[in-house]
Length: 103
Image 1 (tube, rainbow, N blue to C red):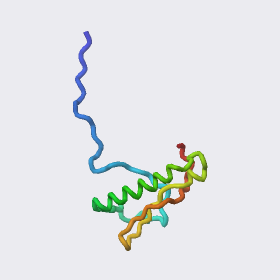
Image 2 (cartoon, helix red, strand yellow):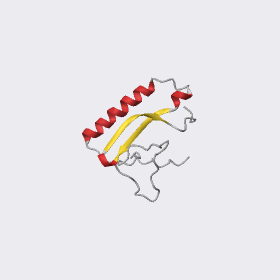
Image 3 (cartoon, rainbow, N blue to C red):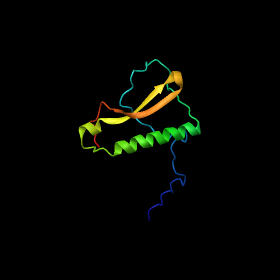
Image 4 (cartoon, rainbow, N blue to C red):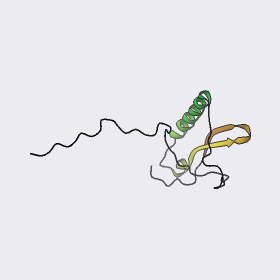
């Protein structure tokens, strides 16, 4: 008679509660010096975070209307413009360099 295997832990593994995801950027212009501070942190209030969420949602909704089979459409993306002197981050449509990734 075969031995019963021990039941695996009932607790599910969870992701790091401080992180909600990671994205990889197409480009950063002008380049940030490698020996600069790591990471560059940007803190937002809840109200400003909601505004960022809405701006990103609107920009992505507009881009989603494009035909992604077209190279011109795949060359469009989202641009975050950071103005450190004004403590401002702007969301707009922009161009991406590498649009060869499979879709």
